Amino acid sequence: MGKGLIIAAFVAALSGCTTARGGFCAVSSPLRLSGRAVDALSDEEARALLAHNRKGEKLCGWRP
Image (tube, rainbow, N blue to C red; front, side):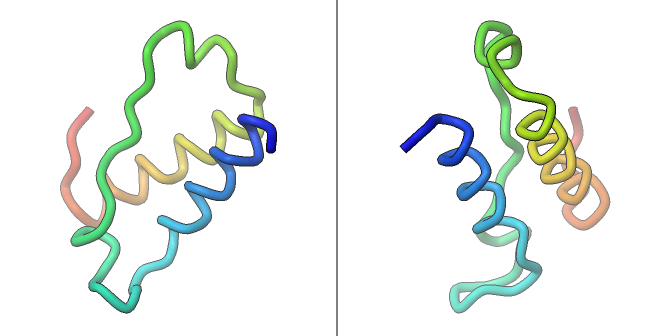
């Protein structure tokens, strides 16, 4: 399974507002990558990661 597919599946799994164990803020955390990992992301992966972190900023008060 490719790295991009794994990241996309991970972000998709975390993107729901409510899960069986609790809301988004209870089960999610900011996704932080090293500079090397960021350089290796495709545009689609970078957009998905950014969307996840922006959702957390808005719903959970995450700070960069």
